[in-house]
Image 1 (cartoon, rainbow, N blue to C red):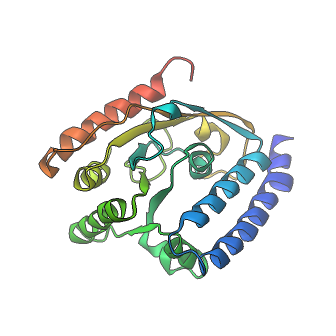
Image 2 (image 1 turned 30 degrees about the vertical axis):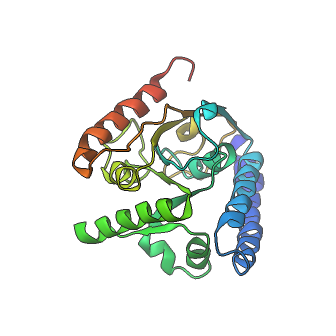
Length: 239
């Protein structure tokens, strides 16, 4: 029954919601060049996807965040449904990094670009550094936050080693970096599966870590600390 519900109910409605909200966002981008209203639409889209998937997200620790501050949010990455979950519970305006190739796809690329999301080019160390530097500039100039998955992609089990990009961006921008963890989403939509299962998921927000006064040479130490904090949030009793 769960598989039939996923194939005949959830999946078609996810495609429909994505087409409708994506079209509205694209039209909206013609009038709002900041990406703020597109983000508001994305939050509605995220909640719609969770609702039709019968996935309930519980937020823990959001009160630790200053509504007026900008952050670099760092989390583990379990599933394609992670971003809808974060959109549904994180109250801040935030942008995320997407693979450069996605920006070349008609319609999707236009939406990502107009909404202010950032392409990441991993073809070389130089291009990757350029992407991270641009991310830090966006935070400093626009006053928005960014969300990164430092594992470099979805992880089928456990927690992979973190890449140092998130720490670099936070230090360059001089904003706090916030460790976060999503728990339970891997079981709702595993990698390689089209079977969306209903149930409860938790998004945990850790204590913001200040980076003011830090030098980029300290990014490895900060990356290690972030890995430890995210691991702790995942393993917290009551997950």
